[in-house]
Length: 282
Image 1: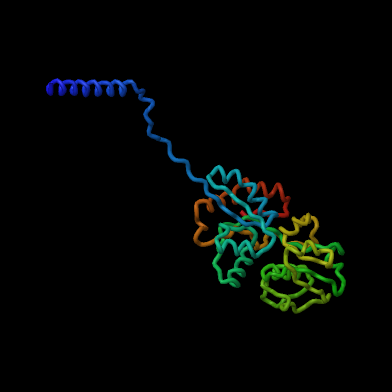
Image 2: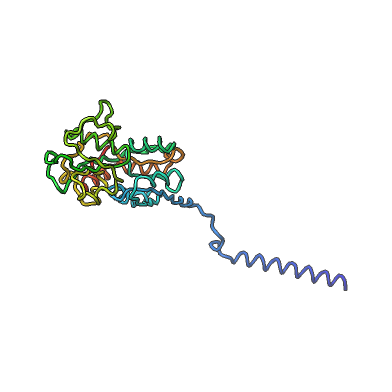
């Protein structure tokens, strides 16, 4: 009886193995999971850039599709002041900003003891003088009111432009670093008031003359080449730059943005859209 039981058990084992073998043979090869040979898709990188709305944000927004095709999601955050974009880059809330020129950045770093850096230069915004009361600087009467930006670099820029056009004379050698206290000759006794740059277009009617940064002039529908009484020429040293931190200025995404900003397509965009009010610097 014991031998019979063992024999039956052996038969059951053989039959079971045969059934498993047959099932395995009937399974299609295609049902087995295939090893993936396709490379993993590169992860999209987000680049947050703070900018003045005109023309900086407009220029950046024109590049979004091209940047996306290169794996970079360009997020443009618009600002209406000249302080927060730098503060937020330094605090790593933004990756970069695009609104300022090198003299402004130098003064900011000096005042705030920070070390923000230039990534790339893009365009020049010729600085201009505007008026709703006179059609030429020569028409300004004695005691006329003049508004200029209140930040040191742009105040010096405005005063230098006024000097070039014969309205005032500054101390020898101060150049674009001049202040109201450096005025040594003011024959018309012009009353010069310093205001926040963003306020200048809104208050232009309150003054006989206002010297306004081009980005704010454009927001107020002022065309520098047509509406300004006098304006900087294309040799202005105030190239507008993209600014970031030393730790990320050479990142792959940042360098892709820099390359696009200095491309032939961007040059054409600037020339076609701004008709000389904005001048490419590359």
